Length: 149
Image 1 (cartoon, one colour):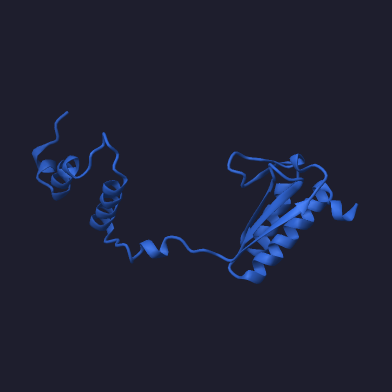
Image 2 (cartoon, rainbow, N blue to C red):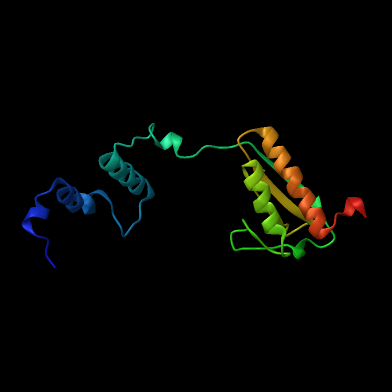
């Protein structure tokens, strides 16, 4: 289906027609692909490498803990390991922690050690530390902790 002449006359259409000369989809050159994305974002919204690329991601303070437990596989997670599916109730309590204090936290079983890994991040290091400590208590509650046996 052909585009009407009014569309073909637009600058956007002209730019789109030039794309095959800028990149080689058969080779998949990552550098030219990156430059193409940068050009599109600059044309579409005035984005540049400095603004707002540098503001797209903000690294928050975080804390990671390893909690020794008798059976780390008791914790089951979703495919990207950001939500606990089992034991029942653990994720609900983690969600409540996040709602009360802000930040985010998740837990996952280690694949190589008898530990559950706790990850927490928040706007300050003190908040991240507190959130991780509270999540650690929940891991203790639901899985038991070797240090308390």
